[in-house]
Length: 367
Image (cartoon, rainbow, N blue to C red):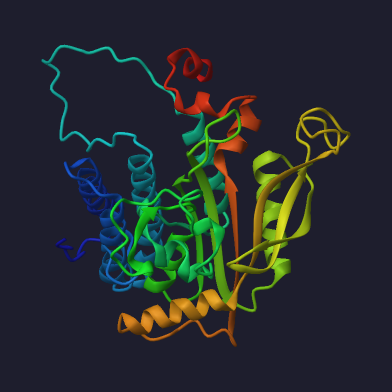
């Protein structure tokens, strides 16, 4: 990508320059053969992405009186590019802006569509964390055992690695265990990939589709969606985790919602916790939805296990990079929640299969 040098710092000139970049990003998303991960690396990469290059060329080199104007437009551009990526990854069509309008062409009538309840719910959850300063991370659905299990501190004999729980790609037996391919069972591999690419501090929210070898019923599906989060910095504590999730739950479900934490276990966090929220249907008084307990279990979380940081450091060394996740200096927390369950709660859906049926009679209810 050729980045022209800014000479004129008037608002009109800056608007034109940023509009040109935005149109180029739109065209890249709409191009045949679009790949989300490649687009993310090219445009949003921390070290060599197009936006990083634009920041260096335009923002850092600008005269002091122009920095505010450029900074405002750069932040808006970054949000737009991230929005293009989320929309394209969710299956929406992103069309480049038209170069002009031909008024001689006949008009066309199009039915106005609405977001699928899953897409809408996922975007709302991601939006809550974006407003808290989190960036959006995406990754491939076909993963290696290393990213999906080994780097996340799953031992070789862990039940999750069995084919009864995980959908594996055929004819992988001849490969070393860490290189065998499978359908990712959670979006946590993106946490590992992000830490390999970036040094701390890191604040990331990760939406996406995951796959497990589950029999389909009213509450289970072999395909579902998750939103996970990762925060790594110096002096991150469990109090930071509790405050973050309490604020996020209030932002999403309403200020009256309360949260409480119970000890749990996950291989990649220590200590770990399950998080419950006060029932959004009865206000905590007790009803059929919450089984008369007044609470609904919603997500899991915990402090990142130092073994995960060590696995990232070792992999960085293998790739020729410096080990920058010093467990004596940095710490972090992670969390994850199921989007499908939250969407079912929010819209009163009783069968998860309806979300994947493609039945227009069902979907038109949300128009």
